[in-house]
View 1 (tube, helix red, strand yellow):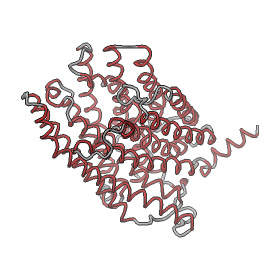
View 2: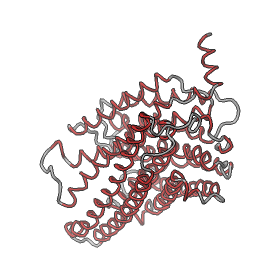
View 3: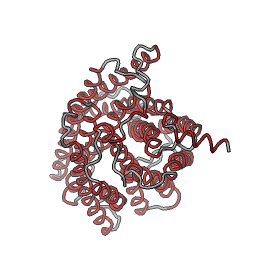
View 4: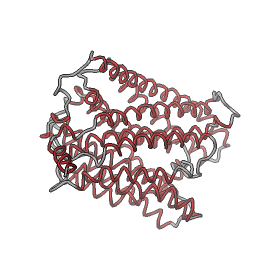
Length: 482
């Protein structure tokens, strides 16, 4: 009876909904991992310009540090940030706290332990031979259990919701159901059950569904929450929000085999993946139109609100990557760009230029609130962070796209392999320079976060009691109901 009374009181009092400490913990861990992952990527890039400092040392093998780069971005940077943002958004959207705050903290520490163990295992040569699934086999069952616990912790308040649900919650529900299934499919079936070209098909589904059924629904769900809140406007079209959701659910799971065109996988599956990929671009267009319809009449927010700027630049990049994908998955394009740096540029733009930018925007919004401060230690550093990261990302994308075209046409012309290496080196140098600019931007932001937190502890930047109280967000700007 006491538990029922306490839970009822918590649901009635919005001040008890959000555990701000767990939000801050996840966001802080995300920032730590993005720096580690980017430094690993910078180290990896040095081998291409003949400046690798640890050549011949097995532990420092560039291939192993590439895994640290990719796994660190996906599971360290993006997953931690999304978990922090979900601990803010889900209780506010449902008016119920997560299942158990102790479980949230257990998940936090367990997830960081999984990440550290993954890095150690990979660096000591225990990676699996599966793209994006390099986590050592002894990590997989633990990570699988962690994903199930995350789903239980967040689905509990969502399923308590009565009446219509926000579109954000639709996306979250889908992600909490899809992600454990996708992880199990990619990390267990090819390892223990399926072999040959069938394992390649499953691996392709896993590679793409990790983006489309884990990162994408959580990313778009959070955009459907934060954009209306900040703009204080409802989403432009409820109908388009439904088209975007159901289009994602129907077409995205069919895309993965486009990673293995011209392979022994049956051609009808390859053709199906191409058609589904093009269909996804049409679906994405409806989502982009919806968000630009939302900001119509509030274009001033792009100048005055840095979070909105991060969000909408990320949306432009998202449209760009999907449009690019609709072309590059055709057999005609694949003859040129397969195995080239075109694909590397595409991957960087979607994982960091889209979801990374959205994360930076929501961090700018959330961190002052969970640290209870009115201003940043150095607001100008946030602008430097934006411009260094944005320009660096844009240069890297165009540079790698151009490199891919040069490589592809040289290979098509049957030029010696060494010619493509020589032609690529200027592009690889630009990639390293642009990546360095991005890293400097992240260092500025991390330093700003740390100094702001430090001064908040001393009371120098303390906010007024209601200034950043989550109960004072304007619900008139809440996402559209589904």
